[in-house]
Image (tube, rainbow, N blue to C red; front, side, top):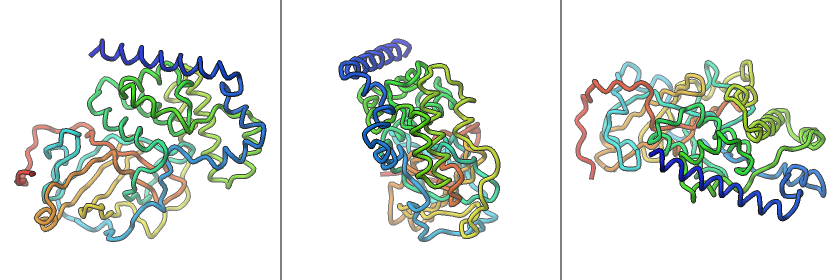
Length: 334
């Protein structure tokens, strides 16, 4: 395993060196993309560039949702005791399940989950969708990479940092979790560190909510490129202190979403680093639709409160009790 990680790290270094050599051949204009965009009408191009992950509450399908009282009084079984597919998804059978799993912030410059915030299921959307999902999936098979290191890598990605600009520690995290081919997915759609003058002009053209996100991403790019940024420093820019605006009364905390596959799911965040996920699978659904699965990284817990964090989900339970046994008898999955 150590040799494999070393090989991946050397490949990444060669890739970075090659990329930097290419940029050097084209001159300073490509080495500092932020300065390039500062001239020649680049401001409009910056403002039109999509975020790395674009999911927002408009992407939530509220059809078939259930109130928080749905399943009230029922006792869930551990979701993590269900069998898994080779890809790491949970094979679902009829019943009510729960696990508290690792989750990650995917929206810099916003506030953490607040009491009363309603979170609903949303798809992972945006230019970096595939690589973010891969990181979350691969993390489960790499317990040597801690949650904080993965969060720093995700912050660098959602801040649209160029892979060539990643500090050594962030590059090492990326090479442990991604294959050489997958590392190539981190290039494209990136920004350099934008000069203060350009930042000021850009913020003047953005609504207040978008200004904080735009500025946070630029600060994170600068930290990611510094090579010695700590988790705490990144978190300071990614997480805004204080309470988010008032929750949406039509989307209360504990609301249930109807999953596209027909079962029900809800998210109860505990900060941004962990989320309790509950799933209810009706028996008649299993009878009519065998082979159901739940795959956490393919969905986002999205807040109705636009000032709060959207949370990437995982299949990784926190503090699982493996001594417990499922009471539900699952039929063999075809």
